[in-house]
Amino acid sequence: MKKIAVGAALAAAMVASLATSPAAAADLSRGYTAPAPYTAFSWAGLYAGANLGYQFGSVSNSNTSPNGFMGGLQIGYNWQSSQFVYGVESDIQLSGADDASLGRKFSNPWFGTVRGRAGFAVNNILFYGTGGLAYGGSHLETAGGTESHSHFGWAVGAGAEVALTRSWSAKVEYLFVNLTDERYALTGLDHDFESSMLRFSLNYRF
Image (cartoon, rainbow, N blue to C red; front, side, top):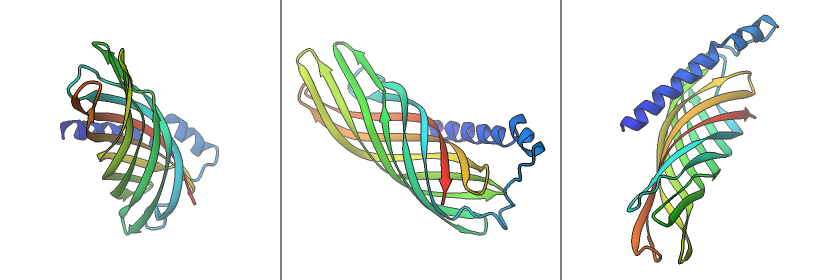
């Protein structure tokens, strides 16, 4: 929970910085019109976008910590009641996270999530928590061969999103993903994958 709290605080601080950056002020001076307050501005509806971030992982019953850049696509739908925003989001990710130790190399080349989101809108900024199902693939390389598995698990996190215009928004999000144990024949052990990740997204709202 400490990791999640730290990640959420970092996400909120980074979005607040984005919302008040000199670049944003420069846009305003060139005639940019900020979105209306929540009473007129709505987060409701369908959105889709892309993300890029970094993954910090660990594998149980091993000395490996698969880390690496990751990126992917997301799609979701929001409903809004006054300042309360809730919805669902699904994403699919490709990852370069891997690590080797004692002749074994573990990697998590892809994963995805299907999550609920709920949050609170303050003008054109949305603060939210999220959680749900996670799934993904793992790969093991040893001198004796290779082995791959599919895992299922869970994900939880928090983030903040700022509406740049009525159609475009940017967000920063911390997510913790646990892909639960699978038995590996090459090691004779159960291994799960845990990852903390920080990612930045750009969304288009339809």
